[in-house]
Length: 81
Length: 421
Image (cartoon, rainbow over all chains, first blue to last red; front, side, top):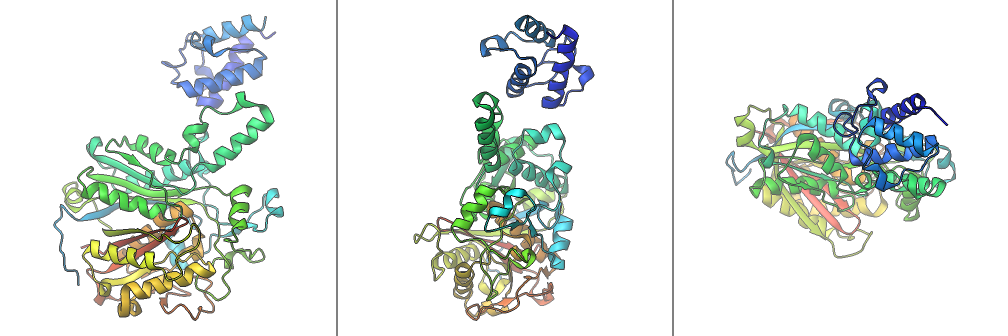
């Protein structure tokens, strides 16, 4: 399974594709909504793309807990473990 | 001459124009192209076109993907993209008005809505399942999507509308904006129309109605209003937007004024879902209502940008309606159909042709109807054919131009524009 750095860079590519955020700005401490300006619809796109890229399931009920990029990286790492 | 002088507070004027059409990516290139008689109709090179009975269309001259930011564009249906491009040009042209947002409205029409999104997402559903359907699908496909996107762009809060009346939609949007200002709901309204659904399904569907020209061997000659060899309309895409406000409001902020939106007439045929009333009675009433609303007489009319779609029945019915509505004065009117160059932009047609009317009065130049080689003997009108025509000075000021738009469902909208001052 991908390590945390690989997940972060993969997620950064997705966020860049969906929302145009520069790859370098997608850092563990950044909040999707407040820092990266990703609205709820774009967040759905990010989640679905991440599921496909990393081969994991991220149920809707869990998405609300993914406030920061770090939250998502940790979640994906554990889900894929 | 006009009998009802309106005060500046009652007079609604045009202060900004924007467009992206098959003839040009902005107003200047569109207008130059129309005056030069340039066709925007091309063969479709996509593989899917080869099995269709109609293998050409009028795509926009400048792809919206070349104009908009990639991330912005991917959340917008093509109708929204085209509307936004035209609206940004119009808004800048109007001087980026600093207006009370609760007094700022939008009225932008579409005939079909986000069909490309609906069809594209259905393809994704079937190929990859429901979870891959984009969360942006509904905001992209809803017919009010373009108006909403433009409303958000300029933070319009007086009301955002989307009149839908098939190919009369764009003109109805202008009428709606006029009504908003006259009714006291807004000081300034961004009006227009947009359409973008060049795709095998809509093409096959219009072709199934036998509504489209099948001149596959010579697409640029396919849209030929009033010509004896016309065989249907040409499917097109594009958008046009106008900024309208009272003359009082425009003058107070020092805006340039292109012309006046003087009146509107809206009627319905009550005849057939897709066939025009053969005598054009609904169209006649719409033109008369627009003139009455403008406080103008038939003798004030110098120019008509006709619906003129190049269909066998529609062109004759409209010609008859013009003769009936204007009587003897019809002989003094320079009539044209810019659809001969742009194709038929459905819900954007009335907006593009409103823009053409405004520019024709402003520059005193009427664009030609191209491809008119043999005038249908049932059409007894002065058609501007071949090249652009100068409008005589002695008809100005107070010259009026009419824009006709008719839609499936029996919708008729006539708009009256007047030179300003």
